[in-house]
Amino acid sequence: MMGCDDARELMSLRLDGRLAPAEDEKLNRHLRNCPACAGEWLRWQELDVLLRTAPVAVPPEHLMAGVMARLRQQRARQIGGGLFVIGLQACALGIVTLGWLVYCLRWLAPVVSQVPYLVPVGRFAAEHLLRVLGMLGEATGVLVKAAVASRSVLVALAYALLAGSLVAMWLWVVLRTRRVHGNTMEA
Image (cartoon, rainbow, N blue to C red; front, top):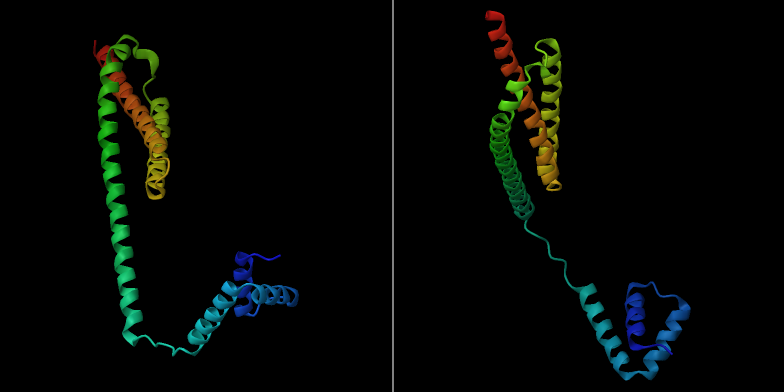
């Protein structure tokens, strides 16, 4: 026996012309035995006729141009807001990296002054410094992608901070080692 909910689904299919003959017969049986669904079916048919015979409204010609202009303005505001957020994130990253750099330099100063031979001066240090700078560039790219996607910003920030810290340490060690070696050579 078919329930009223099932009958409503079949009524919708019948109005769309997608009802199989066997289901059509089941719906007819239900409508004969259920006055509530029969009344609803009549209302559905009246509404269907009303919708099919209603005049088609033609929008004004300028409506499409106005809608498209507003969509372009909205999109421009969204892009501008996104760029503003990326700029803020880059500034925050710079501030945090600078703070981390100062902290690392203060922490490393006594260690490096005790062991000046940790980093040989010259080509080796320059090659490593370039690698670390490349890592910083990659970290910046990851940060920008993360900021745009609004996912895993913390991971990208941590990666950028780590790369920035490594660059700072290498710079400090190279400069410190030059000073140490420079003082030794002069003596």
